[in-house]
Amino acid sequence: MLSVYDLSISFSRYSFGLKKREVRAIEDLYLQVSAGQIMAVIGQSGAGKSLLAHALLGILPRHALLTGSLFFKGRPLTEQRLAELRGREIALIPQSITSLNPLLRVGAQVARAARLSGVGKKEVRQAVQRAFARYGLKDDVASLFPHQLSGGMARRVLTATATVGRADLIVADEPVNGLDAPTARETLAHLRELADDGKGVLLITHDIEAALQVADKVTVFWAGTTLEVAAADDFREGGRLQHPYTRALWNALPANAFLSARQPALTPPGSPGCPFRLCCARQDSLCAERAPKLRNAGQGMVRCHHA
Ligand SMILES: Nc1ncnc2c1ncn2[C@@H]1O[C@H](COP(=O)(O)OP(=O)(O)OP(=O)(O)O)[C@@H](O)[C@H]1O
Ligand SMILES: [Mg+2]
Image (cartoon, rainbow, N blue to C red; front, side, top):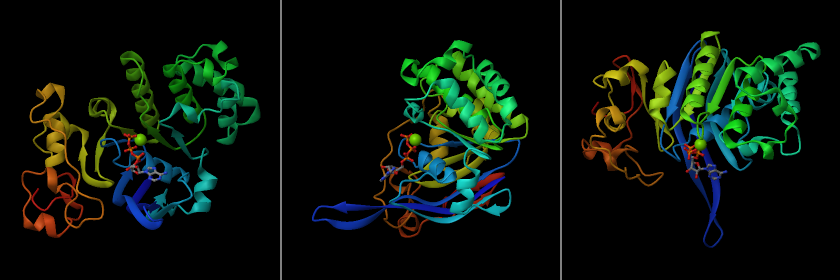
């Protein structure tokens, strides 16, 4: 349903002396999402997860420069097509609850999203009621303004807004952040239901345990690039994971006794070689010289000279 090849996103920044320079936030990113599947994207803060989400919705800031190829349902995602599909066929559950319109009552916001995504005028009311019920929002929440919601409620409203319509691809950016454990589990179960109904779901999170509860596959980001694509099952055992970073993430899971969890160091952006090398026990001169390419390996893909 969605294919992303060699995606790079950079920003122009003015440094001291008003010198303009390009800062690359995402480089050679690869991603595939199929219909009926939850693809989790995991990566630590600043890895480029939200930028990817915004690129898929065509809502990057103006000073962002994007290169690479994006395809949705087999056709290139041009800027114009992105604008047409946004909210209709591709919907976002944004990371920040400030995305809600502060001046519009919650019910009206969800109804507007339903209309935008092609729900007929007569069916809107019912669609909104269904979405409210699905996310445990009482009817009287419809008449509240966003500032009257708790953080958890606001997150549920965002999820209801993104899923009320007919979008085939749901991009969920940290959908369970700030939710208590039962509500988080429910939200993840709803995303699973959407996938089981044939939609493609991109579940962006830094919470691997949450991702593994529902995902089919996992794409691992590091410093704006894809290090590994693995089946979620590979994380249950750990043995089939290939990249040293992914293996360290697996080791750091509570179930695996937080073995060798450590704060990684970042290679300076734009420097040659493997972006992960400064944290890697297996690095050698080849890793410093040349960035490895993402290649098929085992049942997934890996970007490492030595995996
Ligand atoms: N508008 C912007 N201008 C310049 N740089 C930006 C902008 N937005 C993001 N970046 C940079 O891009 C990188 C990736 O940011 P992004 O928000 O995608 O991270 P993330 O993986 O979503 O992190 P988190 O888990 O904290 O949400 C960061 O280094 C950030 O500084
Ligand atoms: Mg983010």
